[in-house]
Image 1 (tube, rainbow, N blue to C red):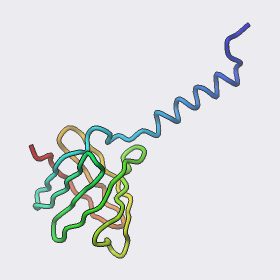
Image 2: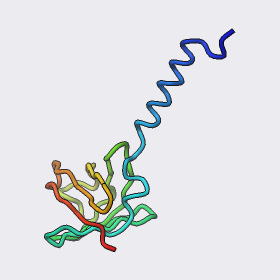
Image 3: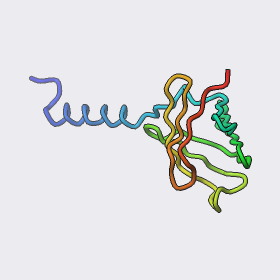
Image 4: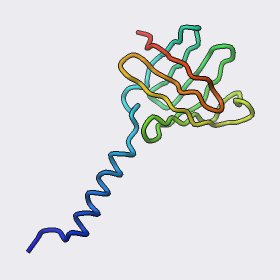
Length: 113
């Protein structure tokens, strides 16, 4: 007698793939200070806060979504009238790429050590 039915095994495999596919690629990487060539800065803290400067200073809270998604919330001041935005941020080593979107242009940052 098999331990799991075929349907139960398929459901378990599907669940495992969904759970691992929904993880943030930025967990354990994003905290710290980041600087772009034009002097723009991002700082992400371990307690979920961020501050961004470069032309204007914006602060708020962030949370990590699945993959490269990072949610910026409680923006002060609001960005183009919005108090929250969703950004695509990918981090490889000491390089952070902020993908351009409706609220920000593409930009590359380097970790400040």
